[in-house]
Length: 255
Image (tube, rainbow, N blue to C red; front, side, top):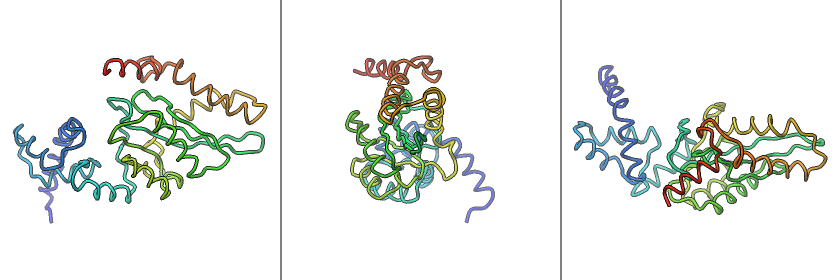
């Protein structure tokens, strides 16, 4: 058992090493495990045991995609771990997607709106609307995003712990596609605040301002607003560029 002094030393070492481990891990494209990272740290002059690196990586949900990572990842999913940890700034498109479902009452019916955003430029990359908040809604929306974007390995998908995101069929689909799943903590909307902000904008700038005449008009207006949101509405987080503009700039630079 650790004594108080050992706990303090570990906390100090953890604070110092965590950002360095994250940098090495991400530069390896999430392929390096604790042993490789420990060797790199040693070469940089840090005296640290492999088990310490492993503990820091596990606490942050950083698992190598090689070797024994599968069982560790499956354990993290079972625990509904928050891998994203409110790290909403990412370096490239198709690294992290976030999603949620909101609802809107119209004509004595409740319509459920599922949206997926790519965190890089905060672009809405897929949406669907249904009268049932079901797994089918989230599955169809995810498929629309996945097959239109064709993301590479190590895509992180973050959502709350709603039944349609933790259903066996949805989680199995993501697992089969090699997508890593991350979950907000129960009762903690700040863990998915980018989605909260998007839905607030959708409602304030479109849904609450319009008197729809039909279900078709409602759905068409939402689709039209999302296109406007992506292609015309500038965002402060993007240095006053649109999501499409920021994303296009990235792809042009990395063509």
